[in-house]
Image (cartoon, rainbow, N blue to C red; front, side, top):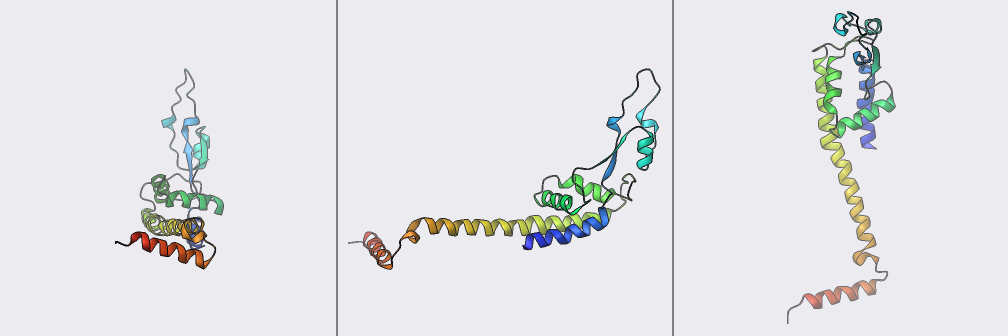
Amino acid sequence: MILILFFLIFGIIAISKFKGKFFSCDQNSVRDLEGSNYNKNDFYIDNKWDCYNSGADWVREYYNFDNMYQTMATLFVLSNNAGWYPTMFIGATVTEIDYVWKDGANSYWVFYFFIFMVLGSFFLLNLFTGVVITTFNEQKDKLGGMNNVKEDQQRDWIDIHKIVIDSDP
């Protein structure tokens, strides 16, 4: 519950800042026409409409903050330290909705990702893992060992035999 609440808090902050901004112009979809003077680099792309006018596609990044489902999935990937760099880079370079990214536009949002990585990955995920392992070990002890003996007399008998085996003559 603590982990979900933590993700929700950071998710709400991310949605309020990044919703609709994790789009980019995919110029790989533009094919050069044979025999023409067309070149992909001839177009200056500043926004979504420039992208469409150049014949490219305006695509959303796979990990984004457009809704709570996508946000939670993105934050989970960030907390696992897998694929955190591209998401952080995009978050630090986004400008406005339907505009391309610019270097250094939001450099201070790197601290948001850094704080989330430290708290989410190193602290809360390890806490969650520790609780799961502790619960697993408790359940394993209940199923095996002396905990499956039903009566107190049987436990006492086993304890006496352990003492006898461990004693020296």
